[in-house]
Length: 491
Image (tube, rainbow, N blue to C red; front, side, top):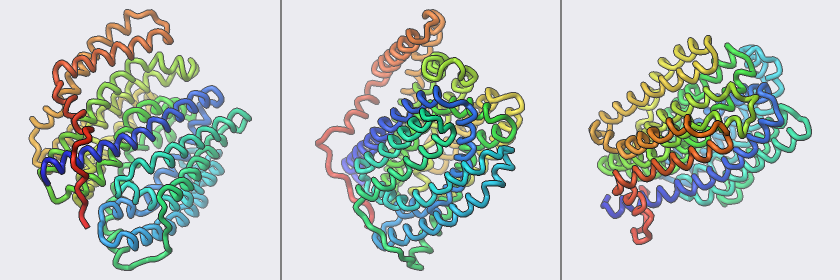
């Protein structure tokens, strides 16, 4: 692939990421507003109970399409028949998982020693049928890099979820306001995906295609299962060893780091995976893409993590109210956890795009082997130490992930360091300004938080422009309209 074609693909990928992030930002803005309102209408135990239900649902959801959505993006042969076969597989799995969740709800409630979880989980189980109807529509839009058409379904899901939850909470539905909001948002998203995708499936099972989809999808499912366990192991341990109130405080502390940092990585991944799949036979372009991805993602996630850690106390006091004060130190440590995780998060998209998802499975096993015992021990000392354990293990695992990437992608450590240097140097300058300033400013959260945000952003951007102007100019150059059309993928 020529440099002009590579730049064109990079520009299309970043444009797609911006569409994803536009939907993400607008949607998460609505989530933020609804979260603030719900924090004032509900009690921590309500959030903790729904968090337990979603942990179970999210675990089962990794099996919802048996990885065929990712396989559909990777596979280029016979797209229409492949799509219909993938839809049929997903629908069958949706039915099976709904039944499994309904019947298994008492067992989950016994594990968490929370009998109120049974009806909550049984109602949430309907979400498997709803999502099964949209998974392939969403995958087809990702495969075509048609991210702008995903904007309305993604924003619609969040808007309906927040509106239903807040209205029901206002009228006293308690925990059920969160449950029905979850289902309402999922249903709205499915209906909108059917409208914008303009594709209608046929119920068919082609034996040859089923074998190809499940062969690749099986590895993806294992990646998803390991990733889901790692993502939710803290909730599992807190739910098992501590109280619903503790889980509620922890859940709310995680909302902002997840909203701003980790969700950004997922947004970027949605654009990177199909883009890297087009480069799977061009190792040099993949290497350049990996380093560019690392550089530009770090430019956003590193300052965001430091900034959240600094303003956490003011943020919780202003938006959640003082009754959520136990969430403050947890949010500070989880911001660092999110920062460390974000640095290597999207490297896995290259392994999936080149048909090597098994690498992610080996990494997933290593992550769990380290994380589970650390968090189990930490839970004995409270949720703050669980967050500390999360940050510490994330740092170790990120270093391990980058070392493996160096070996498999033929990338030198010095190249990784150069990619991270702009964000690191600018973040150090930001920290030098923020930490003493936080002590000098008057202890009034409503005045101090905006001042810290403005000062931190100014220090970061000024340092970045002064020390690595070429990085900023290189990012801006990708949006010039004189680039060639995107190169075609494999056919």
